[in-house]
Image (cartoon, helix red, strand yellow):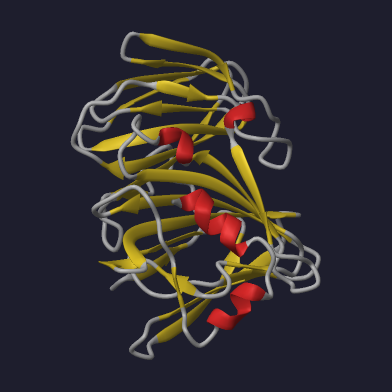
Length: 277
């Protein structure tokens, strides 16, 4: 199986994905803490990025401290404030307020120094338009700023306008070949309002296809195939995105030749591609 949908559930601060099929290169956890609570982790095989989705926490990576991490009451209230930790680092998170924290990990085998990504360092690209029903803004938490400081992990937050598509035109990234790189990927959804919903489509060149209704808190993991997604009218969508390259960091999307002509009709596609390289 090259794709799976995980419905929203109370994970009790345990990893939702931990190098499991179909994304053996990805770790993903959601941690919820009350003020004063502590969460610790150590991932021998994975580099990671700690991203407070809501609330404020103090964080230590080995002997280095990062104070007052998190600057927003919710994902809908500004850019992320994040910390990178290399493989096998001892990470301790102490909540200063009620917190929800995403931990995104990627398979990597070299020690790396920790660093903070402040909101002003998060790089945004505006893609699509409401006229083409494709407008989304992508905020790169760990993108170009990780070159030379991180392995093959890419982390971003995507905000899609009501009734708009993302991952569109359809593309895939499951083979290391000219014009494409092999990257596994995870999407984690939120909707505004949270009663909203969307759809995740998936298909491959062999003709297999499936469609899922997506709801607040669902997670989609895939290692192959085309994967466009859409949110319904009246509901803005948020997607926490984790990408991990098999042999390199830079992502090159291979757009479905049937729909490749749409790349010229949707504004910002070229800029989006450059931000992932």
